[in-house]
Image (cartoon, rainbow, N blue to C red; front, side, top):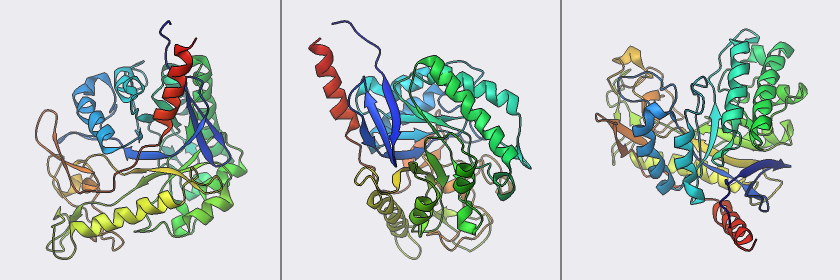
Length: 381
């Protein structure tokens, strides 16, 4: 028996995401994971979290993500000009097919008015990442940016033409690689504010994504999200961000945050209840369990705290709160530096400490059933 390069193929069937390993039977899959942008203390947003230059960070994190039970992560950006810079990290995610962590890659996108900025460069870069990673077994797919949709641009055919050119670019790269992967999004939840749905507009413009992804923050329930998605699209749907900060403001003072205590009001138990409610909502609407359901999974925001997100409250080296109150969150404040499943402390790399025992995602059985089937087939040939 000769060794062969493992492959994974990702497709859709109705509202279900389907995955197979080494040509095995496709199995319905549900993402259970975290958004991954582990920025060290003192830095701004990490440009390439899976890059070779950040190996100390992802070597620290990937085994912990696997132990947590995550079967997928999504990243926000990468330095696409550094060709194949993420290969070693993806190999570790794949883990020779043993409890793999499937990765959704992306490149950061901004928009102005109705146009996507730096479009020509992005087209080239999205094709590159499709070519470089489109046949890697750890890749589930590619997200076309994150959170750059506005009520203005989604109403414009110009915006969707720009968007579709990036879909085409990454698909061209995937075809060159010989892979079969998914194209997704990570848009802002405009429907929450009674603005017209991004998905409705995207479908009206016939964009070629396989899976719709929306970041959703509506409190401890997703409210009528599922019925809204059901009426907007027949494609699979993922919640690409959801969560809450593990913080409160003891003196009810802007910027002055502290970790939620174990007792009193509010407390860590409130956060556990909040996150459990959201996870249960995702699981109860699983398209894996019932093909007519809406949910193909979710990504907790986020893996680790990021101290750079409120620089106006103390700078990059200070773990500070924000200035916006939000009664829908357990601690009552929208503290962007405190959303992590893990807090961070000084060290090289930074030291992680779990913020709270948030619900542990249960792995999908694709990794075992299909791997065993494919091994048996190869051993008998």
